[in-house]
Length: 120
Image (cartoon, rainbow, N blue to C red; front, side):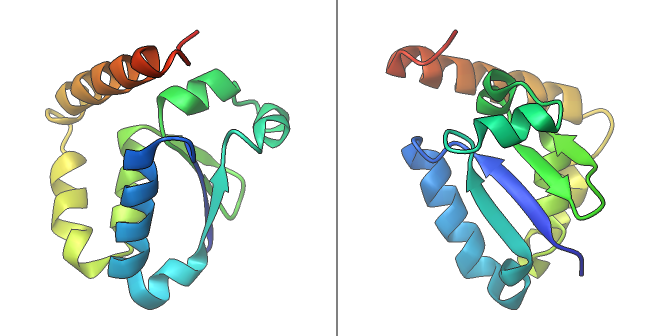
């Protein structure tokens, strides 16, 4: 299994809880995931062509070969590594469902960031 680098919002309590839950459920597979708080890795994101504000609004995952997945595709990459989440990864990856999930996710993140005064 190749390593993944996950750029997540370490300021967000929900994001931190999701990370902890993922690590618990992933077990051994979780060792192949490097978690990077995007707030501390903004320059690294810029070097990879990712706007830090875009990373704040949507999960970004970097594969070992340097490819970056974003949004629902990033979640699918993470979930596929955890046996109990594989069915959910398949489900949220369905072509007809992805745009709807993306709309809800984007709306939730924007509201959270606006509430925290971090939306620009």
